[in-house]
Length: 339
Ligand code: SAM
Ligand code: SF4
Image 1 (cartoon, protein in one colour):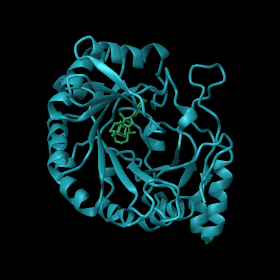
Image 2 (cartoon, rainbow, N blue to C red; image 1 turned 90 degrees about the horizontal axis):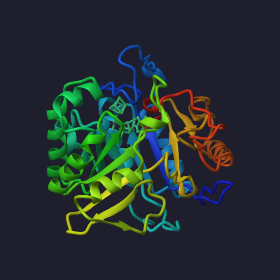
Image 3 (cartoon, helix red, strand yellow; image 1 turned 180 degrees about the vertical axis):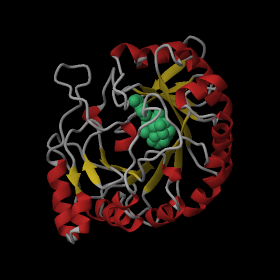
Image 4 (tube, rainbow, N blue to C red; image 1 turned 60 degrees about the vertical axis):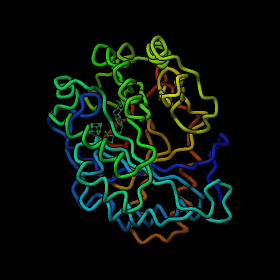
């Protein structure tokens, strides 16, 4: 049975945060000091994550899971979880094109330690990786992430390609006056490496609540900047994927933009989220959470958990309204929700 929300959108994609901790302190996500981490006992165990994931896949025909955080690779034994989840198959009876096949299992990482685990993650059954990289300049990398790991991230990208992940994608959050001068350099890097770069509009989910509309560099400006040098053509079929894609007319691959602020794609959203401590959210910008961990630890059976998931999806709203007077910023920041 599919999970359909009140606006007729079918849930297909589950984002699972495996930790709120991180080895970076990106300015658009975390404060430099003072993050209060969840106690380890508050995190869902791998068994609990697997149990919930199984309900989503087997009962509700969810066909894609993305592991995120915080930084997912700082969670000990991540490949063990990957191996468990990679065995989940979409039911034969599902309407998904992946019916009868393993789920599409992906990871979003900052790449700092990826060179050490890429092969192990591949062997465990992970299919796709997105690596965050906002700048190619050493000093600016330190300013944005507050850590000196540019070389490690670049090595991580190479390791992911070598390990055979397909596709490997790069996520770049563009902020006005910070790295908007690097749009072309990052696009060129992707063309050279044959990796899709996805430019992400800066969203009001920074822990320090400093976001301003003027800091956002919108999709139109990003595409125009690249198109001035490398001619682009929009790829029309997009479905529920958050990124819109353009192909380079000279055949050097594609580039994407996630225009959450200037052109929200809420009407096509097929995503739900589980935080590291088992709170279920139907939108990145939700102000309501559903406590699945309490159900798991309180002895609820799968039927009861499935009913709660359906109830939650029944409250999913039409869209996030960033920029409208009605917009209410969620209390949690990106790393605490799971981006
Ligand atoms: N630590 C991993 C990483 O950075 O890739 C995974 C978690 S991170 C929260 C997931 C994605 O969210 C990253 O690509 C990051 O750049 C993006 N992100 C974080 N804060 C953001 C914000 N305020 N606006 C837009 N994207 C943001
Ligand atoms: Fe960590 Fe990712 Fe947030 Fe950066 S964006 S601080 S790497 S969770």
